[in-house]
Image (cartoon, rainbow, N blue to C red; front, side, top):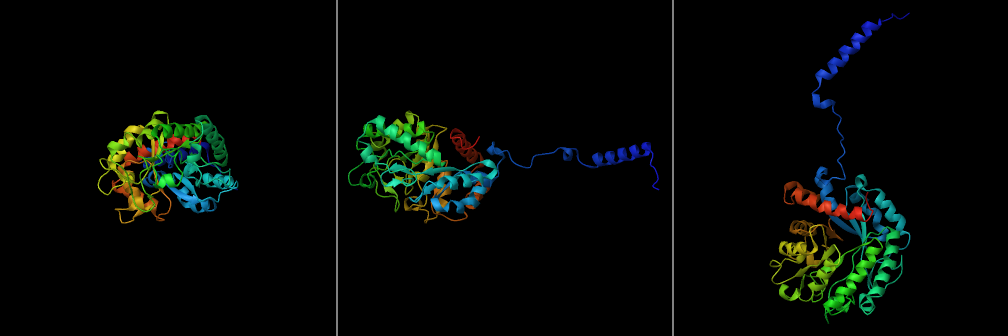
Length: 367
């Protein structure tokens, strides 16, 4: 039969054990700390999470699952490419969003201008080109954008890379593609804002493009586009953009354009510090600045076709989001290294991420 231990002796033993445990450990060791960063506060984030949030990548409808690795690292967003999306993309988007790092869901964006640039035409319906819609009343354009935007939102698409605020200059790329609402800055200003307002009515974020005006440029998929001097743009191509900003459009896509009197030698607007300073003064401190795809030849000219370098330089210059459609698999790692080394200062990256998260909350993508 086991011996009985007196209550007093047992109490003494427990007291001695507890006393030894708490006096043997440093006082701070007994304070439980949450090992998971506060993902509502980017200041607690790792360098990798900050870097990933400032990157949007491209994906066709059938390839979203291949972006899972980046999404789990905190990828900021995915832009749809191609025209293969059908209504089943809704379930694909829901799945990819559910895999986000600590619930910081990526936004889904899509080029939805109408005409030849419309990724969701099979999932929703075909829209006329901007050139055609430019002949409509402002009210009809707004109503059309609202109806289409509601369908976008129902699929889980949060951002439209439209309206195009470029002027239609005879013989140039935008004009030939019928992607502009018109020739006159005053007309394009009204039509672009009508389209943007319709999207906003549908809780879709419009992104006006391609600042500072692509109308006089060649196709920048090959090389940077040369446009008139800043002094001329101020009274022409920049007018619709400034009207959009004054009318409440707060997100803008930057083209890969060379502007005499603005951009540094051989430096497109997408990675020009002078251009980004001007744009920031126009769109405002909380505006969201996104590059056109940095996979384009116009973006990588002058950096030896190095897409990761183009992304880092764009972020250095002042953009918030580097959009990369085809790039290195280690893009996030490359940008992370630039943050860790101090080339991309953490404080600046935090400000970019704070802007991005503010838009995600506005769109209902994150709480």
